[in-house]
Length: 307
Ligand code: GLN
Image 1 (tube, rainbow, N blue to C red):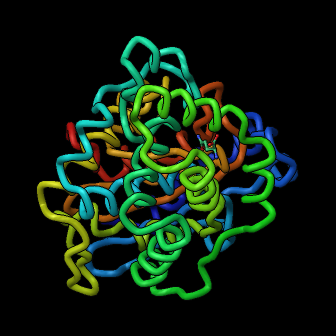
Image 2 (cartoon, protein in one colour):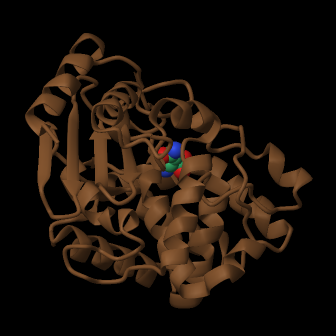
């Protein structure tokens, strides 16, 4: 693979669109981020790493954290998880409440807010709210080989202050018996994991196990079973980008997860993991410039799972 030429293709594709999209503004810490930031990191199975732009700068990982909590929950509770959360794309915004009534408090999938809150509730029930966050941070630090990874406390505080929609989702699910812990215990862990700050490089490194059947190829540690890994990737492919999951799969053809901080993580099974960051979002909350960069990456590498 000619990586210098792939990197140059991506840089050329990004230049004319740089700064496009709308930066999330529901909390001040996200609204203040410079829309011109752009970073990309690719980590391959043999550890080779290719970085562009602001790839070492940390940003708010937001909903990308849902992939890691899902992998923890599948380890802790196994298939029982699917009794409380579905596997279908929602076709609705990430924080939508409408489908919850028709589906009697069972969220459509674990990557929308309601579903991720149920996943976190499982973890909080098993190990408690602070321990859920501690274990997740430990896991990310080990995987990314970087002990500096942490929660941005100012983001976490704002998430809670602006968190009435998530409280509504959690309370609504609790009214149907689909939340076992208190709304505040579960949400304090949820707000904390959405507020973790990581760089493109750290995220791509931490997610590498998802490209190799659940086993981190560099440390040899089995993080999730082969089967769980396939399931996580399948859910990312069909549900990773809310109501633009279909468009993302059409354009990029890789399992992925976006966050409103402007990050997108993608998994190229058998090859590696990549993360892009550019804060301007499209109307569905997925990084606009990030999607262009990933489209170019996939075209140049032939990594789409549809070949
Ligand atoms: N913290 C955000 C929320 O819960 C995460 C949403 C996202 O990244 N799509 O609303």
